[in-house]
Image (cartoon, rainbow, N blue to C red; front, side, top):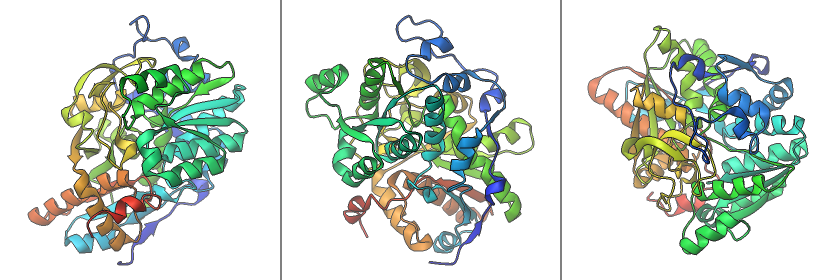
Length: 428
């Protein structure tokens, strides 16, 4: 492992505002009401979501202030470091300069806490007592569980059945934080029972877990639903990643040419890329934005753009998205956070316009890449993050072949210390 260089901000340099990309996207197809098929109104979302989050979902205001209570908690682990991956550069023998934003330093080990804290906060000030959600790999469920506990709310997490089996320690983390975890699909909801009757041996999917979480929220007067990706307000909260990275690149005296993030629903990728995108809109810079998804859930590279539900039972708003179909059941890969059938509306629109591009990474490659990165940089990455690393490696190899000295930035969205069982069975 070669010595790396970190570019660190102080907590008084933490951004005070989130960047809302909707201010810079002239057109975005509206979501539709799932019952009527008409354009979704803000009040249509109130049975599920806190009002402040709904306002953020529809807002076209470029900068939205981060509440002081949320900023205080973010300062526990933010700003996260920007790291020059000199060990990886040496191993690849590339002229490219490679950087990564290390989101694995959060208490839950991933970027997910960036949105869990504000979502719980907004529900708390509205008097909500309990929150329901879904989780794939368990990182979002862990973030929601500890955030809920901090603000004194109960958290019920429907965890995709496959991941609940593959990742028992993620479940233990959530339960240690105080979250109630139910493998999904389950017999605790009508949606779960219907899915089990139809697919008794299903490994589950995020769409199924979302359906159960939504039903649980809709049937209780003191309960709301929260989610870890896809919707605009989640991506908004995650822009803190790229906003910090901008300042850190100024310290480094450098600037990225290529920006990469793993892609499930889009908030991770959007968080690292969208703050830079605004400079492209202004004509100041041009970037190669790359979304790295799994070959087993390739909604961007192989899906179609149309209206679709975010859940398997048709309870969520209809979203204009690239989708594989809301009844799609991905293969049982370890990157549970990427096993979602569709892309969020913002990322779908930018992909349709050619602003971003997508690559799909074979599961056989990700652990080989993860092991190489671990040995070069000393961090064992989560399977989801390995997709971003693999895409960065591909670009760095291209630079080696062409001699171009491009600057590559990727988001290390989480560590893989609870994914060691998957690493154990991978090639060394």
